[in-house]
Length: 127
Image 1 (cartoon, helix red, strand yellow):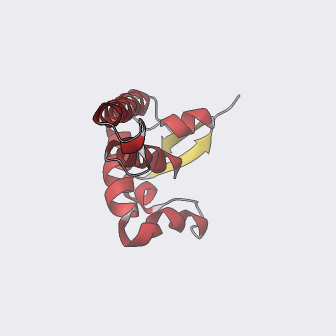
Image 2: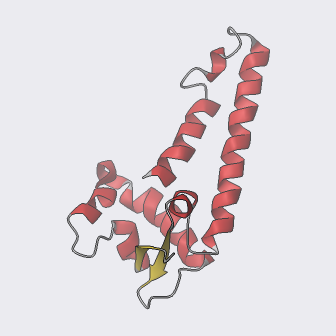
């Protein structure tokens, strides 16, 4: 969930939802600086995420020492991760009030709709 929430929060701040527009007492310079800062954070997050896709992980999964594997047990590659994260998570699991994310709570294999679609599993890394 955090892999989706963090970029959404950045986008909200870019458009002034959450007070960025009033960072410097409502002055135009404060608003512009806030937007530029939020945009820079969002772009940095996207670049970081894309870089991590090649290693079968995402920013939050990396922090939690987790990664994504295909059904054959191999780490998911860039293409699989891109499809899983941007098509599966955003468009498929996010539909119908986020039911695809909650699906992993009732699925015996702990797969969300995006995992089913991409034939992947999330596993903890060996230390």
